[in-house]
Amino acid sequence: MSKILADRMYSKDHEWVMMKDGVAVIGITDHAQDALGEIVYVELPEVGATFEVGEEVSNIESVKAASPIVSPASGEICEVNEELDGSPEKINEDPYEAYIYKMKDAVLADDLLDAAQYEKFLAEEV
Amino acid sequence: MSVPTIFDISKEGRGSFRLPRLDVPNTCNGLPENLRRQNTPTLPQVSELDVVRHYTKLSTMAFGVDNGFYPLGSCTMKYNPKVNEQVASLSGFTDIHPLQDASTVQGCLGVMHDLLKQLCAVTGMDWGTLQPCAGAHGEYTGLKIIRSYFLEKGDVTRTKILVPESAHGTNPASAAVNGFEVVQVMADKRGLVDLDDLKSKLGPDVAGIMLTNPSTLGLFEQDILEIASLVHGAGGLLYYDGANLNAILGKARPGDMGFDVVHLNLHKTFSTPHGGGGPGSGPVMVKKALCAFLPKPDVVENANGDYSFDWGCKSSIGKVSTFWGNFLVFLKAYAFILAMGGEGLKECGENAVLNANYILARLKGMYDVPYGDRCMHEFVMSLSRLKEETGVTAIDVAKGLLDRGYHPPTMYFPMIVHEALMIEPTESESKETLDDFCDAMIELHDIAYKDAQSLRNAPEHTVIGRVDEVMAAKNPVVHQ
Image 1 (cartoon, each protein chain N blue to C red):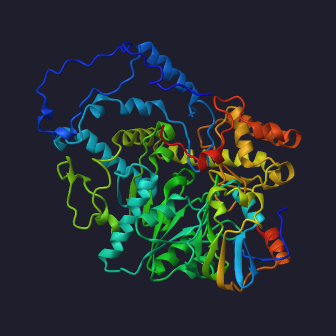
Image 2: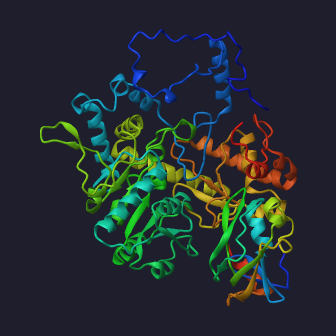
Image 3: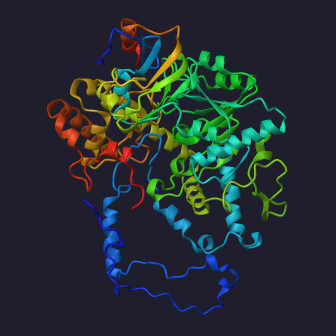
């Protein structure tokens, strides 16, 4: 059973997002890191770039596959987790601590799920 | 265990091979000085026995279909009949040059022409090209034909190619390389193309859809006629990825389903060697409306029965291969088709499907198969439950199979099945082989519950044990 925290919102693409002082902090869920397996590379987006909800921000590579990170928010990227550059395994170790990027002036997607809804969504997925 | 290269065992003075003295005029005189070799090449100095032992040893470390069962899903690792090799080594086929005058290689051109005719009959298409040298090369060629077709019509708005989420990764890649935008079509609960999702994505900006039928889930896209009419209705074309053609050989034809472009893998469906045994061949077949866009030269039969090359290329996408493609592979596929005949090819398909269903029936109680109790030539099992209950993953089971002398199935693909193992036995295998393989899978399932750690350490009986894939992906050493 994968870990789901009650303090944040989730997308159906298995990203989590948490608002902190008007900034959206975004990463991938425990379910996502478990499905990907050992992560070997995280392509970090550029600070200053803007993305809309549903756009592919960058890619994350594991030994099994490369998967897009689909933004659960619109806004401008104001910070990226540089630590992932040399240590992508941080996401496997603690996916809710190892965020990928932060967005300012962020507008969240309107179909995000809360923890209970995300848990139900996972249970229904094949 | 590290294995020395032939250069590692080289000893100065031990070389046992001498090139004969140059006894013809040196024709390098026209070459610019900077392109001429200054020193003799560094060749290993080894005795003939050193060479024989070295390569014999290496050959025992490889695994091919001649060594054992090779159920690599979507790759159709069927047996490569040795008579094909015999045919392809006849001197009339090997001692020729691609630039020889057509009048001196009539037999070879005849084989190419007749092979295309046979492939038309198998696929229900009107003509094709043998030039592409592999499946993805065929995809590239086929999509380039589609692109040229629309551009010549002045229809410049069709910039998108639809690709189902269960597709081979080469499909979106080939579309992207041709300048198309790739749009994914979702699968429905059955694992088939979701018709509502398809409808919502069709429009005047869609050039076509790429489909593999049966899909990589081993399921026949039963709505194919409706899909074809929807796509054609929206002005788009249908591309058939021939990776899984083996399942419907002699039973159904892509051309009859409404496909406009088809690529074949002679190295899968038509029994020519692949993997390390390569090279491949990926002919592309098209319907009449697209014939003008095929690569040139084409092999044509003249009124007097002679064959010649046709270079007329007003609308052609041009040449996509050096010379005429992998000619010796054509011969092997041609020999296979002639040996099997129409009825024989049909039996290939039937037995491939029967074999896959036999394994599925024996394993489905123990392993989960998310998409159905019946399959075509292959099926995909999910080891999610096994992983949750024991910690043993699809890769651990695959490594366990290595220890038991089997090539593992395709892993972690398609992506819509978690912890996937995709099993394709082909028609080549006997019931005894299938039973032994099923017994091994059942044994591995037992071990997962009793001694999971031993599987995480597998393989232990191979030349190289468990490799560190994370390290390899993070710090690849591609050249030393």
